[in-house]
Length: 133
Image (cartoon, rainbow, N blue to C red; front, side, top):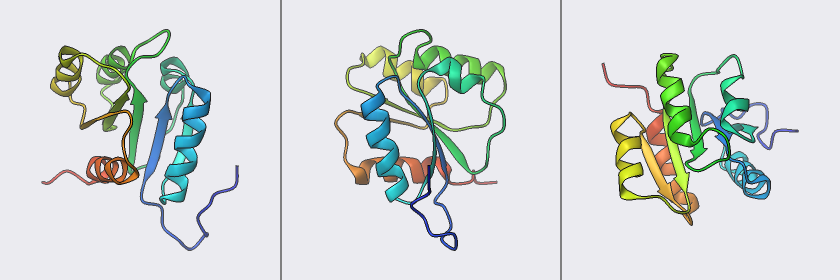
């Protein structure tokens, strides 16, 4: 798919978008590209976990509830692989316990659907910031 950025425009960062809902994933991907991010889409956690090579800076934007591996299971597997990719969850319905567990396990953000373009950009930009030394 052609990028919506001109070749001389720097990307705001790379987003690995993991969501099982095709239409939502497609719309969110388009919104992210229009906002200046590069995007790779994955229909489930396993497809993402099998992907090799991660451009930096990058962030994983993942649905909490997916068939197969859940977002929390994907997060645990990324931790076991010692991944340094920041993870932001999105969800239309989540328990306080799930949200707390995700944050305790290192998620850098959580957005409840529906969220605004501004909220999305803010959490992704924060996740893509290099850690302070």
